[in-house]
Image 1 (cartoon, helix red, strand yellow):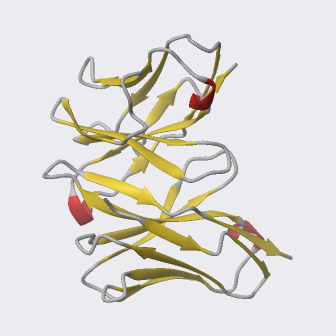
Image 2 (cartoon, helix red, strand yellow; image 1 turned 90 degrees about the vertical axis):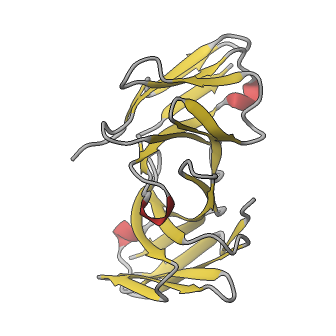
Image 3 (tube, chains in turn blue, orange; image 1 turned 60 degrees about the horizontal axis):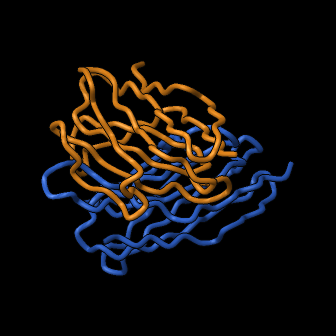
Length: 115
Length: 115
């Protein structure tokens, strides 16, 4: 099955600085890599994802890069703001025969943006 | 915007009691999932459900767990005899498609506390 490792486990940055979170995965057949943001006591919310046919995707201050050869992908947040403080999870799917996706999540990164 | 809804939001139960957590997936979705998150830990896959049967389950999903889609809208998770270690947030999720187009939509979660 899929194994997803995420680093760092905690990240503290000054407001306005950039934050980078890295993940590695094991299943070379994985083709979809979502990132979720989870605020305290809330559900995980999809913030960006990348398909395996592209190397980079950007959405305003958030970008994700994918290196399929090395089996790693990263989340980049630029110009961080206090509301970016949350736990971020990367994930990768393991295809279940022909019956949907099972997501394996990384261990999470607690991001604290200090004003 | 359609969303996955879950009830109850919080349930407190005594060890050994049966618990049923309920979910209403997004109406045109075909794939249904339960995940759980122990406090402060990562989100873990429990089970996936498609075409009225379990398509995959994790080692966490032992004989004490079962899922059912009793009608066209509800998707339930039953824990027959709860243990202390079942205390967690349980998230239901659904997706319309499989593969890279199968974005998972999570419900707000049901917090289970076993005393």
